[in-house]
Amino acid sequence: MDKYDIIMNAEEQFAREVTLGVIVTRPLTAWHYMIPGFFIVDFLRRGSAIRNYTKHFMFPRWLAMDAAVAVNREEDKETLNSRIREDISRWLESQNLYTVNLVQAHVELIERLKEHYLKLLNSNGNTINLLIEHAYQHRDQFKLYINTIGSAENEVDRQVIEQIGAKENVKEKILAQQQQIAKRRQKILDDVF
Image (cartoon, rainbow, N blue to C red):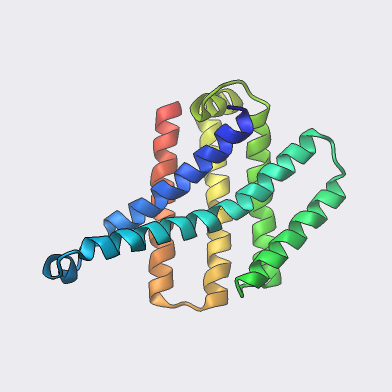
């Protein structure tokens, strides 16, 4: 498997783990005990939640990886940045979430991800942990990346909340996702370094 596939498969797995972590932390309802077979409905609902979250989590990552590959091919930066901005705008419009601030927050997130992917693509290794280890070489450097990407993701989340409205269930869901992301990234940090 080449580095591109290793990185993107790891990102997809990360998204699934985050979703499962959020779902598992929710307490079971009385319906789980009272209705035989409710676990099937719950199972289907979980599968749908995993697919939806993974799709939304991966969209900026696909753009960032494509940008990293384009940078390695020495494509024109201006054209690349324009294409990314257009893709984000179209995607957000399709989600009824378009705002200039949300587009800019995604641009910043994609820029941070692109830098990360460039490091990984240009390092040695045949697993994601080896790529991270060789790209960052020290725990503190990878921790700095985690903080930077976390801030960029939190800004996207803040803009989404601002756009949707500060509904309590939306804020709770986003907070639960942020906590799972932080927990999973800490595990990666501890596993690699």
